[in-house]
Amino acid sequence: MIINNEKNDSSENFFNTTLLISNKSLFPAVKYLKKRFNILYNDEIEKNNVLPSVTGLLSSGYDLVDKSFLDRLPNLKVISHFASGLDSIDVDEVKKRNIVVLNTPNAVVNDTADLAMAFILNLSRRFFYKSSIC
Image 1: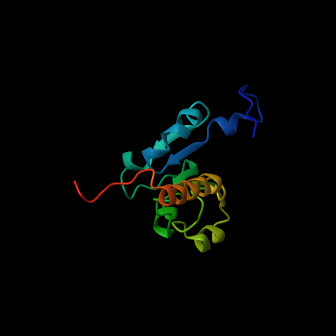
Image 2: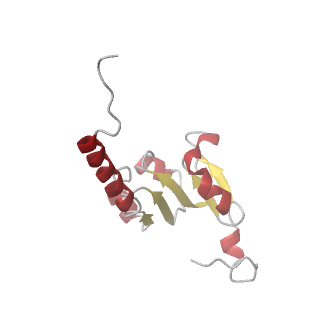
Image 3: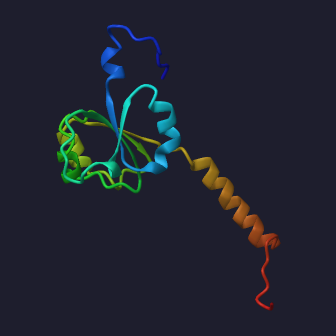
């Protein structure tokens, strides 16, 4: 997606959007996003606070996005989930609330295949063989 850095009447709401970042491991993405959005970190707010200003959520596979979490975000419109699956997201609840969920299903497919082949090659050729006799 190409983002226009110039503010105009149609982009004013876009630049005033607040994103909730579920954990600090997503910092590389935040460096880019903080120029365009208001940013809140989940671990810096009180656990039961309702956050009506938040319309976007960045989460990872380690973060549980369930009904009680979604209840704190009454105006949430989109979840950008940095994981290949949706195991940590209550998909039924998200559907009820008409929240768009985006994830990265094929982000690590090639790297995983490369690593598997490297392990196979290592095991068959004993490149990194550690003797039990030390």
